Image 1 (tube, rainbow, N blue to C red):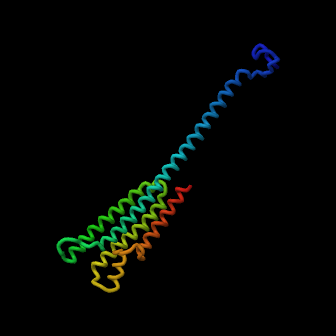
Image 2: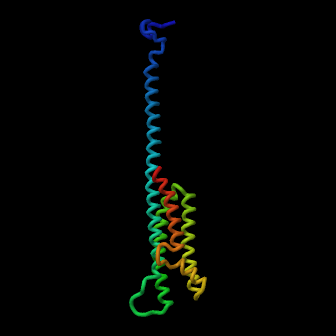
Image 3: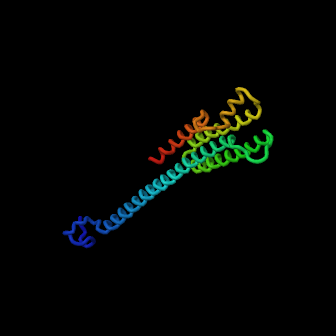
Length: 193
């Protein structure tokens, strides 16, 4: 039965729920606003993460090319002619190694800096990429040690081809370059997405 004194007239036909509709509508409005806020925050978070991943990928690519340039510079140091007084072959080799190791350290630092940012987003990918590049550095260092031990012959020639680079199209240069390009391509895919 309808209570006319409580709800108003019978013409309104409110079925005794007149006082609850404003509360229900207010609650629905609050829930809608809260839902929009949650969706907006999630969208903002995805956008922000995407921007950070994009910047990290750019830094990795830049660091890779800095690494490649420094690594190739370390290999070319051996072809620079020394000016000044004539020194012994061992002294010249030690001086060249200091110059090459500085280039190598600078190149590795650029790579480590770039990869440290990327480790946050892609730890497994970065670990594999870093391992492959460090193998090339270790090959270079090992070849230098072999070069110092071997006076001549096949072992000396093999080490010499790794340590020294006259042109950028020798086998070791191409191997390093293709590895750098392969890794950079993986990060370019992130830039495109």
